[in-house]
Length: 363
Image (cartoon, rainbow, N blue to C red; front, side, top):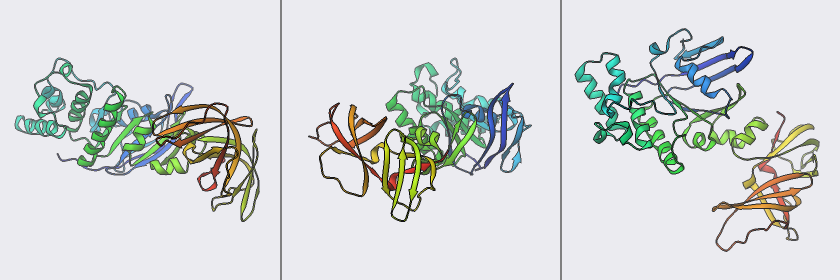
């Protein structure tokens, strides 16, 4: 297949339906050959942006460029963009072969070339032996592969995926996201993947953009967004985070004092990323919290908070505790090992917070 790697750039894209702003001044650049995810909750604007790229929506302000060329006024059928829909949108009365060939037939592709391209597309997704079956005779994962083959066979400039895994069960989703990633790497095709599932985005995408209420919150790799969230929304949406509002009251060369609302003063070893004095939100991940029995000896490298276990969940690889500390409830994850007993509700515990794992957010 002759697939070119192209870039996509959204410059100051805004779109409204009446008084409702769906996208507000969105700026994103996607590199040639990149697997890029648009991540956000329902109503965040991610699917609207994907459909805008496909040409099904029209923005009122801004520019949309493929390889530097503005395609704002180009109709969908002339953009050469392939899209896989959430429900796959296969023709039920057609065979797998005819479904995959449909776009080429519409383009009046010569017969020999059509056969070669359809055969190559089916071979690419491992469905050569299923060419004469109908969609109803296939599993959900196989139907998705047909939809992918039908899309890549037309050799699009961009591949757009709109929640393509949401109709599959959990185990199949894991398998199919690996297959999606491998297919994208094989083709080298610039791919944009919409999902509300943070795990799907983090395990497949080279980079991702997080949107909320039509506003771009942050763009970066999964590790960058997880470790260095730009604001409270990103911290809580990409993974799980403990968030404590309060004030940084003192910073010197060795320590930092944070007055957390409902919890009290916390003194942590200062780091290179220490914030300025003023209002802030303290964010830290549950897996970085050390949980101990209340009277156990603790080291001075962490800030320690006394609390009481409110509930626990056994998750297999770890146990998750919700611990009441003053007016706040903090989450701590403890790796599970055979023979390790769970803390019971009501247990008096101490939580240790590692200063290097803390982020102070001002947004």
